[in-house]
Amino acid sequence: MNDAQSERAPNARPLEDLYDGNRFHADLYTDPQIFELEIERIYNQGWVWVAHESEIPDAGDFKTTHVGRTPVIVNRGKDGAVNVLLNRCRHRGATVCDRNQGNARAFTCPYHAWSYGLDGRLIGIPFAEGYAGVLDKANFPLIALKVGVYRGLVFASMNDMVEPLDDFLGDAKPWIDLFLHQGGGFPLKVAGAHKFRFTGNWKIQLENTTDGYHFPFVHRTFVDSLPEETAKGFTAFMREEGPYVRALGNGHSVAVFFPDTVDLSQDDEAPVPPQFEELAAQLSEDYPPERVRWILRAINGAGFNLNLFPNIGLSAAFLRELKPLAVDRTEIRHMALVMDGGPEEANRMRLRIHEKFQGAGGFGSPDDMAAWERVQIGAGASHDDVWIMLNRGLNREVDDGEGHLQAHVTDETGMREAYSMWKRMMVR
Amino acid sequence: MTLASFDQDRLGDLAHARAFIDQEADLLDRLAYDEWLSLWEPSGRYILPIDRDVIDHAGRLNHIYDDGSMRRQRVDRLMSGHAPSASPIMRTVRTIGRVRLLEADTAMLVVASSLLIISFKRQVQTLLAADVTHRLTRGADGLKIAEKLVLLINSDEPLAEMSFLP
Image (tube, rainbow over all chains, first blue to last red):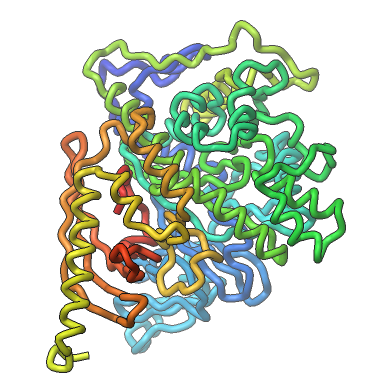
């Protein structure tokens, strides 16, 4: 591995000094060499989320994405297995697919028409006589990444020696299971995504998924737009004792905003809110009362945000993916989730709820973006001693009895977990 | 339809529609959002799709899919001064071109146009391009918007902040 560490300025602080469990240096947002190291040591070495299985349901379905900055194709083979392949022709290096998604029987390079099967096998070289005795097709497939799937979440790794996905997800797995209960008994399906880019470092977004503290300030106009009862719920967690954030190990954490809706399969006996009464009546024509109550209870998603290091969040009712583009440039994809095979009216309601907050036209995402961009601008202030505080709640952090640190949902315990993992992967 | 086949009524309809969408653009550029809201049928839909070639927008995820209540909330949000992304609201200058009358009868005009918006905020100037379709009802007090569909040229690609009404 190329050791970019040696390329850091001679007077730069050592990486291990940049985060101390209390604060981190703003270089983590602004230093291009640290960013290069992050790509090498985090994105190219560990597990990275690449797809939800519902994005590629049938044989031949594919999407293109990136692992770190490396272009990859995620597809479903004829055997039903998920393949993740480097999107790079073995001949001269061109990408062999430049569509965002689709269905294909093979991938053909546009340059000299080398073609590859869904499993990456090199199946065709035009005018192959120039390679007789020179090159054996069997040795030049598209390079396959290691693939791991947990409950529909597809992860890939460029590191063959990476730990098993089950071990990496660890204590986050029960929370993934709980997240799926919002399907109301149906599997979850990705139904479109908002994509946007902001001028800031990827970790600003990573932090945000377990940042309960910002909500009433950054999202004041969203809260103001809600029916009174719903609005109360969105600010109550600031003061109440029940809501918590918990470190889950390996950089993962969960922020529980609404403890009553952690497990949506459990009936909370709460009345159906007035804004859903009409929908309840429609659903009652096709589903028994307890199923109708489940679907409606789940319509705003689970009562928590699960943050999986380094690039995927299972956030209330949607999936949030982040892609680091440059030290100060990040792409985000917010995927709406609906019930696969579930009632159309309820799925449409889920889409409308998602649209209201998310994306460039939403009432929430643009304000997050504005705040994050201002973090990047401020962090870039030319002063050697700019530190980002990460110590909220250190005074009230407790062990949950199973070895996880836990504090109030507005505290920075989840972020500290992410930066501990950052340090573990970066400093060696 | 070729220009030669236009009769005077159709040219009149086209001019009427064009004046209306120019006026709408002016209101939006001047942030006269309350007046803009009054241009709408209460049941009118304001739609910015993500996916292209979609007919059933209600069944798909959109950037914007507003009824009257959502439009009101959207305007209140932008004008509140409490939204970090909309303080200040982006400045915009928009240009409308290639206006075509797709349908015209006594009740309705359907108009397609091209829209270029130059937006500006914090030293960043951005160009947005879109195909727009207005469905306009004709009533006693003039034209009203029954549907405005804005298909951004990059609707299905990552967008930047858009703290104004396209």
